[in-house]
Length: 270
Image (cartoon, rainbow, N blue to C red):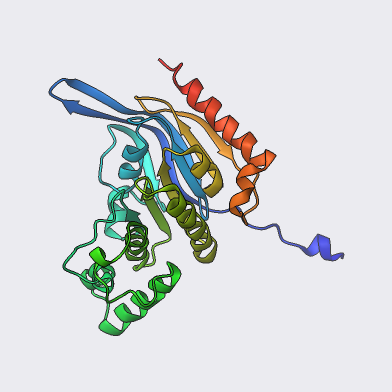
């Protein structure tokens, strides 16, 4: 029998997130606010998925539903085969907020230590994990510094390190680089791609930037204005190794154009 005949097909990546007919409506004094409507989405293991859409379209709300910070009104969602509440209790994800949210009275190492200390890891294991994640985000040597002694970009890297410390397979990132200048943002985009390739984690990433979404992602989810619906899911044709100058390539510009068209089409939804 030939070697080709003996070859076993590679298993398809498992689903990490499964959302079906997901809706979320907030009750307010001014009446109901329909944040998400009929969201159907599968995120596979190892995906880097960016969510892009106009302000208020439900990008962050969807991330918060995954993290069990918001509860859907109807529909279903699973995280690693569990409910979001079960996934939260199992610490199945790390979450990086828009602001670094570091405690100013704790050193960088102390901030990273906090969640794994609460989780009951031994002191030697805490030190091992802190050293590892500081190297991953290229902050080794900065563990004894305080947040106010670091630049904004370095603080965000420390925040990412804290989310990585308990080694969850899923990383949720809510526009973590939005407040940074373009030069720092480009550098952190490069570092994040390197981190993703190194760790193999599944990443859900919220952004308002078309170039950032196209540069980082294996898949781009384009959302409509409220109530947030998925207008398009774009599979990226770009290689996993992506120098910054790939943003000038015809392939990159074609994906960016499709994202832009999806954002325009989203405004036609009722």
